[in-house]
Length: 133
Image (cartoon, rainbow, N blue to C red; front, side, top):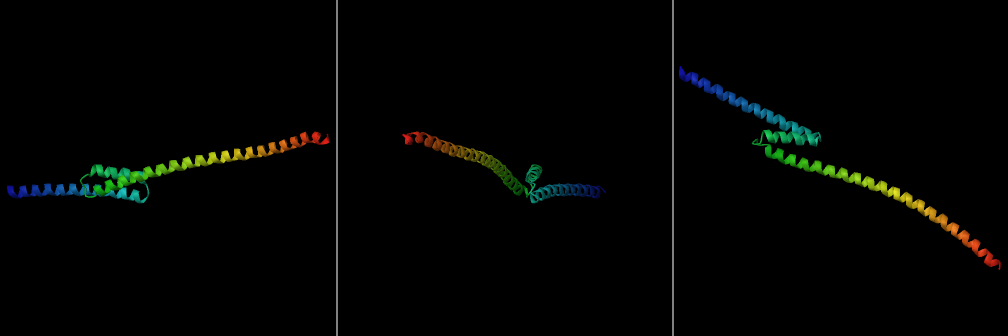
């Protein structure tokens, strides 16, 4: 009697362990699928967070190295996108400044042309009395 009861108890214990592993596998698969879905949707920051959560929770999972590699690549991608955005803002500011300076240069060229015309007019006035003598 003891033997069948012991066997039943061992079977239930092992079945419980199998269920726990299955639940963990389902949870890890869910985390990984969420991370992959965020990656596909181009939600890179969300994907980084999900991959990080997966790697932290399931460091020994067979897919953990892939998740780490994707996470690292996404971190570099997000950093590169931020650098590009900063460079574009700097370029936009430089273009605005160049436009302002070009407008100032054009204004000054107009003023120089006006002053030259005034100088020529004054020169011709100064030369008239000398011609009459």
